[in-house]
Image 1 (cartoon, helix red, strand yellow):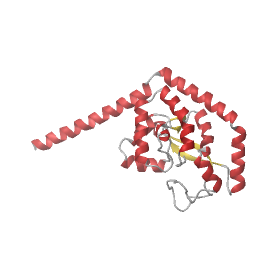
Image 2 (cartoon, rainbow, N blue to C red):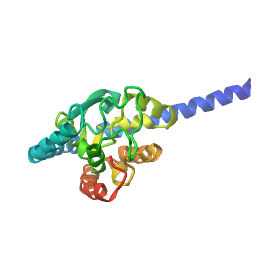
Image 3 (tube, rainbow, N blue to C red):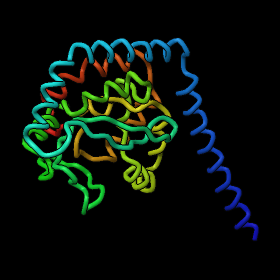
Image 4 (spheres, rainbow, N blue to C red):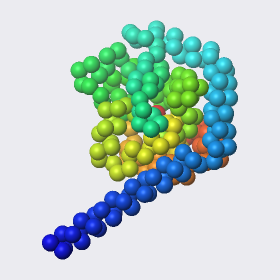
Length: 227
C-alpha cells in the first residue's frame, strides 16, 4: 500500500511539473514582449500587403496556368489548425488533380506525388502554391513566420504520437519557419519538423523571425523537398 502511495505521489508530481512547464511556455510565448509582438504583426501586415501588390500579376499568371492545364478551380481552400488550436481556412493554388482524395481520404503529400499536375509539381518545388496565404497573413490568421499549419486530421494523428505537438499552436502558423530553413520541408520527417518547431516556440523573437525570412529564399532554391 505504502509503495503504491509513493508511486502515485511521484506520478502526480511529474504531471504537475509537466503542467507547470507547459504553462510557463505558453506564458512566455503569449506574454513575451508586447512591443515585439506588435512590431511582428506590423511587419506581417506591411510585408504581406506589399507582396500581394508586387506579385498580383505573377499570381494571376499562375492562376491562369493552373486553370488552363487541368480541370478544376485555380485556387482551393482547406481547414487548417492555427493559434490556440482554432481552425481557419487556408488558401493555396491547386497543385493536385480535382478530387484527388475523394476515395483515399487525407493522404500526406510527398515528393513526386502522382496526384500532382505537371504545373502543380513545379509550383510545389518552389513553394509558389503557398502565395495566396499572404491573404491569411494579412487577415491575422497566419504570420509570415511560424510552424506550418496542418489539417485537423493530421493534427489529431500527430498529437497522439508526438510528445508536445500541440505546443506548436502556442504561436501563429506561418508561411515559412525554423524547420523549413533547416531543411525539414515537404515530405521530410514530421518528428524532426516538430522538434524544430518547438525550438522556435521556445525561442521566439522578432530578430529570429527576420533571420528566417532572409534565409527562406536561399533554402527554397537549394532544397529539393518542396513545400
